[in-house]
Length: 76
Image (tube, rainbow, N blue to C red; front, side):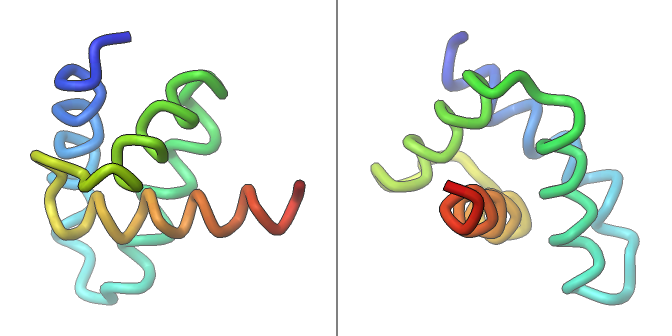
């Protein structure tokens, strides 16, 4: 999938969770959404994008994708 599209989708998800006053809960919510609803290939792509600089990702998206990467590394 086109990485710009994935970045846009991740940022859109973050827009929903940005209203959460607890920053950690917002990060967990976004990471949970990505884990639950995104295909594993999409998650792999967005994690690789973050590792290569993460252009276009919002701050919340960066934190959530990093948490997703950390969680997936623990499982592997």
